[in-house]
Length: 431
Image (cartoon, rainbow, N blue to C red; front, side):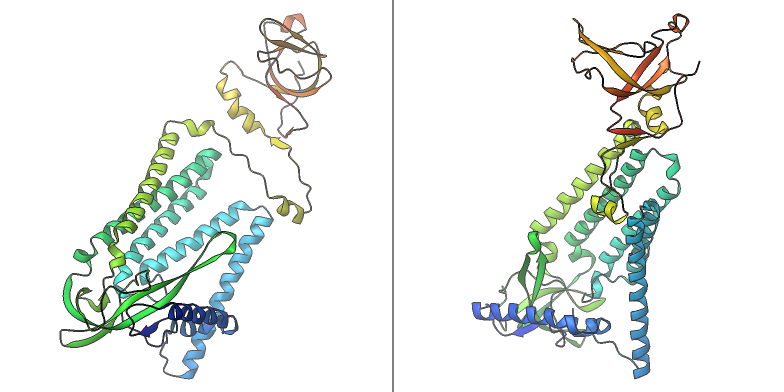
């Protein structure tokens, strides 16, 4: 891409090899630049931080552009404030719709403009558009799932979203990796001779664990060359992560350019075998995860899963709630987990009962209730509750014992009422 001497992050030198003194000077300049951004009007950050200057016919036009930028930023802040509010109020559905809509708008924007980063070559637009298509497609599919969520079980719904995200992410990574590997045949198809006139270096940063920031140097030779009678001064489309260059000052080198945009030069980083192998490996892992979850859904296993969620205690405190480990059990949960699997149950009921006694037998531990209308329960692992324990018992009526007036209530599951709360509509059997 074109060499922009106004970019404060790009430092030009004539040294093929960077000394320790020059290395630390670059780091210091970068740190000072990032600190200076704290006092810069955010509407001018592209010009101050990247050297990107937009041309305006008049000062009024410049001010109109700045106002539009400010309005867009305020709108974005309002949207994200709404997202946070929906989380605090536990309106997850609103959060999901708005969050997905934001990704949809971003995907469409990248697809139309082909822009990914502020400083980027025009030849990389095709890569950005592939990513834009992926984001748009994933957003549309997730929105459709949200609209028709009533057709899926809770666990099945979340697994389908995961299949979409992992599947499209894997296919996109694979497509981008293949395009990068074939970039010399698809994009940078023209080879010409250029002269190294210097070296352009910049500092990049990545965040690590415990808020640590890692800084590293990226380098590109500054090439002078002529194409179709026009003189160009350009650098690699992607700088190489190293502080020294393999090309000597004044050396003639064979470079690959994009004939549609002759200022764009293919970077060795684009076809680095290690980077491509990592991208392909991540793509295959994502695709494998998506396929595995898809098979799990197709064979019906997802319908037997349940999804239980608890809010962060901090959010509960904001809402004036106390932290609790009690799980709310609904009719739908009992129906799905037990009743639907027991074909002989037509109607079911629920009561709170007290354990009367337990007895060890050859088959295990037998528990009886104070209410003799309940049948005894056998615990093969001898883990019956202690006498006097209260249990919430879900049961059905055993018609064979009903005429005798005892032992006609047969439990199919029970639990400690201190650990879960039944919030459904079923009650005790009334005859």
